[in-house]
Every structure is written in structure tokens, then in C-alpha cells.
Amino acid sequence: MPAPAPGIAPGTLPAGYVRAADLDRFDVAGFFTEHGFIVVTEALGAAEVAELNTDATDICRGKYGTYGGWLGPHDGESDDDVLRRYLCIHHPHKFSPIMYRALAHRVMAKTLTQVIGPDVKCMQSMLFIKAAGKPGQAWHQDEFYIPTRDRSLTGGWIALDDATIDNGCLWVIPGSHKHGVLWPQHQHGDKRFDCAGESWKHPYTDDDAVPVEAPAGSIVFFNGYLLHRSLPNTRTSGYRRCLVNHYMSASSLLPWFGIEGRGHVAQADFRDIVMIAGHDPYAWKGTEDLAKPHVRPSGEGGCGGAGNVAAKASA
Image 1 (cartoon, rainbow, N blue to C red):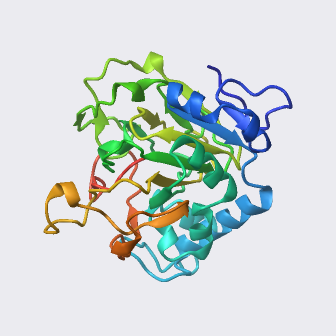
Image 2: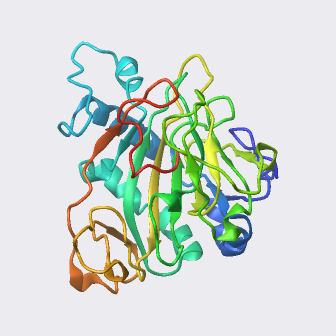
């Protein structure tokens, strides 16, 4: 299952890649069910990508105010100097209207209703900067961090730069979601990766993985049980920016963090959500402001400081 180089020529899309304009003519649900991922190219236009990248710089500079782990003020620093200080900012949609609007982008919503179902909610956004030289994240499953009772967790990974092998694109193990098993994690000492744990005791090796190169404006969708990782950005300059949002069926409860002391786990339901499509059967519960924007420390690889946060997922 080859991956394309950025700037894919007409008629050369490999298996698992579909242009946004062709979604109605492609068996999105079938491929996603079988392989655990799908890539929709040309989902965002150049202007939309540029707006998100400008907003990413504004967020790092503190345009919307301070947040947990913010490294500013950045007076006198160039944009490049500022961006290099950040690896990931969690929940940027909480203060940025531009990031909030991207949660329910028309192509995002259209694809999600095909792979999840008619009722879709979002519970998390993550803005990755990943400047040249910054680490990736070891093998993991997003459902390890965000447990959905119906296994409907789906990542929507928006490429804000051409994501390539040398700047740290995603790698996936196709079909690895089918086991329905959450593999254990252990701490690693691999400097290629950040501090998050690494999935192990699964029946795969690195040879089973394929790179998911994605031109800017593409969206990579992947199942919450799919084993995936990213390697470091090995370029000498530039970034591999992306906005990663997490979604699930609105018909299912979400026993995520911040729910301690709220009754039996069977009724536990994280209600800091944004509806993306369809109907919310639990709308009568209302919503809460529980998750707060915060920085994941960039580091230079390996483990240190506050890097191991329970809400991590999807490098």
C-alpha cells in the first residue's frame, strides 16, 4: 500500500486515498472498516490551510491569552523562534474561533458520518507544530487515552504542511485495529520519540507499517484502535504542522478524564463536547467546560518534565 509524494498527479492516488470531490463515489466506510484509516486529499483549500497556520502562530504567541505551559511572552522573537518552542497545544479550539470552526469542516463532517454514523461529537483538538529536529511519538492507540464504550473513536488529522517521511508523517499498521485489543504500554528510552509510552506485546513489527504521506490540506482519518506512530522531523528547517481532532458517536457515553466522583462508571460521561453532525441523544445533560488548553512540552526526544500527560494521543 504505497503512499504518494506531495503534489499527487491526477489519476495516481494509491489505495486508501480519495479526493474530497470523489467521496460520494468511493466506499469510504468499507475501506476504513478493513484497513482502519483513509486519506481524503484536497479537503481544505490553500486559503483555509494558510488561515490555520497563521492562527497557529498567533496561538503560540499568546494572541488569545495565556494557557497552561505557555512559554511567552515572545516579544522580540521571530515567528520561527516562537514556533520552534512548541510541539503540541491541546484544545486550541477552546479559545480560537478558527480552530473551533475547523472541527466541523464540511469534508471532516461528511467523512465522519460515513465511518462513525449520523451522530458525531468531538471531544478534543491538538495543534502539532513539530519543527525540524523535533521528535515523533512511538507506537500507540488513541483509544488507550480516550476510552469510548462503543469503540467509535476516530482521529481527523489535518495536514497543514506537506507531511512526508523526512519531516515526520504518520505511519500506520493497516488492519491492526481489528483485534479490538488495547495493547499495554511501556516507557521507552528512544530519543526519536517524545515521552509518551509505547504500545507493545502486539503481533506486529515495524516492517508491517506503511507511511501515510499527505499533501497540505489532506485529512487522515484513523480508527482509535489502529496502531500508529510518527518519526522525527529530520529536515534542517521548516515544520510538519497538523491539527488533530478526535471524534466519536454521539450516541455513546465517554468515560474520559474529569469525571471522578460522578457516579458509577457505567453512567460516566464526559460532556465537554462539540456536536459535529446529527443528533445528541444526551443533550438534556447539557455541556461542561472541563478541558483546558495547555502545552505539551516539546523536548528533544526521550522522557522528561511534564511530558507524560494522560490526555495524549495522535502524534
